[in-house]
Length: 330
Image 1 (cartoon, rainbow, N blue to C red):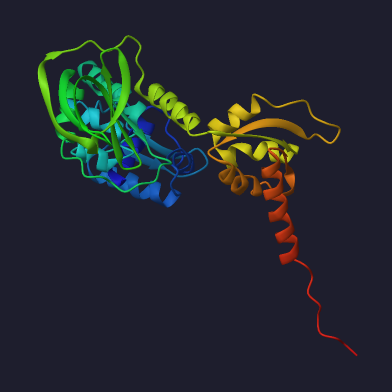
Image 2 (spheres, one colour; image 1 turned 60 degrees about the vertical axis):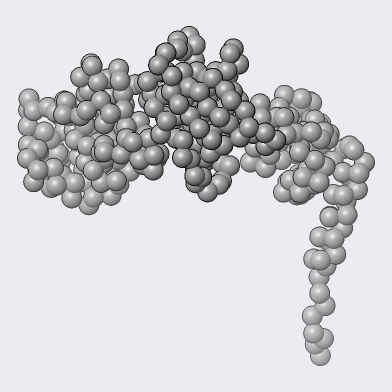
């Protein structure tokens, strides 16, 4: 979004009294030099006292002594800056009126009374963009849930589980947007767990507030919860040998969590550098498909059925790639 880039450019220059070259700014903002010059012209036309100087010692500078504090932002606008990576998420939470800018630099310029409120977003809303690719869901109760999260009030809700509908009184600690799917992270009695917001049938905030757990970090909790969930899906175990190259490819093929657990069991290298390790996968069938991606850099040790399956695939590959006889020549 160009408006966010203009604010970022302004803050870069404000934090560099000596100015910067267009090339330096282009690198910092990850845009072209031409774009930097267009943005400088836009800021100048809006009244920002910028001046440029050509030559070896030239650059782009703010007039000495001029600063912006961005103190025209409302509390909600300052808060919404922390959802700049997901404008549709800001819209869903009713925080869609702000111009996107560099978060840490904006925080440094905010007045103290707004800085505290803006920082609350990091505690209560988390964006987890990659993976779990799904379409956006219908979440009719998101506004009520988000309001309770934001104000720190207890929440009564009816929740549709797979087998039945249940009622819960929760301490709503945060909301997570995972690839288009909203999750409420909340405390039920002493247990913290996540709830899919699209399954919330009804929600209403209660008048009483609750105390957040000391040191609770929404992003860290979510990451740890996801890792535990990923491990719970790994119900099949096998033993493999991998080459040094295959060892390096494990995170790419199996994901960081499974690879980290496997690497914890790795044995010493043989004379050729190959190592044996224990690997957990969803099923033996899934393991076959994933191990094939390592090609000649993996050997299945056990179970025997896994060795046979990979051997059959290898034989089929050889058969499919036998050289064909060319036309006879005189």
